[in-house]
Amino acid sequence: MQAVRRATQRRSGAVLDVIFVVLAFVDGLLTLPDPTRAEVAVAILTPVLLFGRRRFPVLVFALTLPGLAMGVTLLAAVFALGTVAFVVRSRVVVTCCGAGMFAASTAWVSTDSSFESVVAITLAAAAYASAPVAIGQLIRAQRDLKQQLSELRQVRERDRTAQAELVLSTERARLAREMHDVVSHQVSLIAVQVGALMVSNDDPAVKAASRTIRSLAVRTLDELRQMVSVLRASGGEAEGIDPQPAIADLSALAAESELDIQLAVQVKSDVPNSVQRAVYRIVQEGLTNVRKHAPGSRVDVTVEEVDGSITVQVVNSAPTQALPAFPSSRHGLVGLAERAELLGGHVSAAATVHGGFTLRVVLPID
Figure 1 (spheres, rainbow, N blue to C red):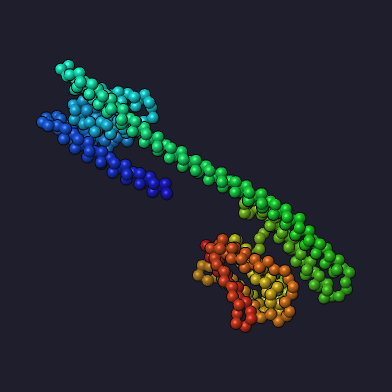
Figure 2: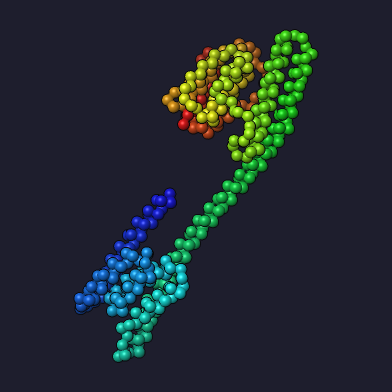
């Protein structure tokens, strides 16, 4: 954006230089009723100097003064003096140049001139010396004001961003405390109660179910601690947390779910950690939904690489058991869609004709 702005400014400056040179050239030729060769040469050469007015403003202005003293190049001197007032910030230099303009403008006053002519020439010379200086400094002040306003907007935007980040950090810390105090406490109670049940009951089926529940509760506590660490880090990945789940962990996830699952993983590329973590969470959410809304159904989970993207598909048949009374926030698919969107992917979900359900997510690898 800045490069385009600078290129536009250069083109505008070049066009303005051409306009000034043409106007000064026309002014020099039209003000001479019977020009000599020297005056014609000055009228032709002096306007050309204006092409260097930005790089050498004082020098170019000084070179226009002889033509002004000859009464040939008034506009060239006016443009050069305006450039000095715009570019040079030294008041002494600008004042000296204005004085030089005034002196050169009154050079043709002779002793034979009438008082009225002297007054008129003096007033005109004062106008020639003061007007370009005033206009040049006014344009410079306008430019400086625009720049200061732009910087002020940038500072305000940075302050607004910093304030938003502070609010977000505070909210993350509050959410971390709530999760730790409430969820962690209740899951810990579940693990303790199930452990007591596993010790006090001799039924092998109850012991196996208790062992599974306790294992899931302990893993939930571990993942909760990881999430709390990320939230307290206030900026994405937290240092020092345990390794995050990946595609390689899907087999263990399928085994722990105790569902009738057929898992197929066909991924050969080196998939980024963020995508692997998303794939794991998508499958985890899909199996959770099957357990809640389609108990007893058969589940086919497919993870495959297709055309530079990872396609995750969880398809379940119709439920064969009564639906359990699990609480549901109905935010699962919304969360999956948001997770996929952050990675540039998309989610589709629909019921099948045989009473089942299909969840399909496509995530780009790059």
